[in-house]
Image 1: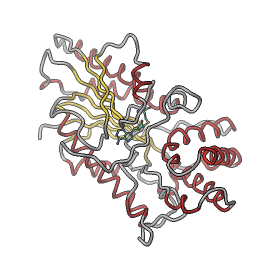
Image 2: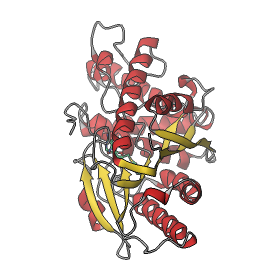
Image 3: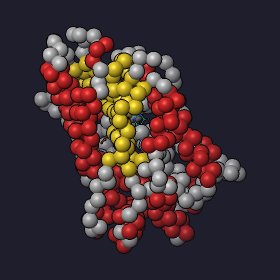
Image 4: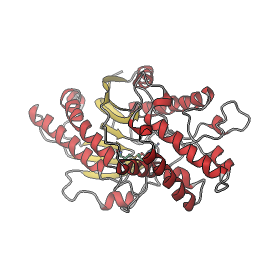
Length: 358
Ligand code: SAH
């Protein structure tokens, strides 16, 4: 088994309070709902059950599941689709279902387990650890799902932290607007991580099984600087620098903060899948962006959404009061300048990969 010592974990806020992931993941949910019908289609048309052993449990894993409730809805939908397929194909007996909920060990698994649906039709298990390494025995899982998780890199690329390196990312917290070397360092880390992800899944997924990935990214033709996620992090970085100029936080801490997220294009992902060679790309498409009106309420929700996502990264650098102040000024800036988030490219990339028999 491979070790994964150097990976960094920044799970979403746990519990069920105002700034919890549970109460601030409706954006992810609305997109997962769109993806739901695509998943049904993938299971109906692309899952190849021929090699699956009859009478053995059907195993599903959700990687980067966080605390729910989205993961429960997704899993239920996948099971319904599989049951429907088995009924249509008159495959008997209907298998029992086993579901693995994976996330970093520091994820709030207690909340996840406490809120498991009472009427669930599966055996549930938690699997702690990074999905950039092996999580399951060989050829043991039939459907792997992962949503809003694979844009997280396993770690901040080392070069961007090195003073004196041409890729040192001084004064910025992400790669948009940075020198080309910084962008390249992020991209290299993304490629390395995604290769490791596919290598591990190729071992674990049975032939004919599926890997379904939903991830924020950017359309092929949109440059990093215009991708909405990058724009938001650039604004966040500016707010932090303002606080540093006012003497409220240490500028060196801004220099050393880098958010380990990369927004890949479909083309970048496709190249890595092709190189891996163990999967056939059954589907790879961008989902339409959900456009919301430019209201103060939207700006505030967007700010909270970003906070829920990256708060764990910031906590290692700044005091709680500074983080509160940062997000207040971030939210104000989005309210004042809705053009920051209303235009620009964003793509939610939906992919279905089938394990081939190579
Ligand atoms: N899938 C859920 C949650 C997305 S939040 C949904 O769609 O609503 C992203 C989750 O991915 C977080 O809980 C984070 O801890 C997890 N994550 C990020 N990198 C990971 C890794 N390398 N291994 C396992 N989980 C990871």
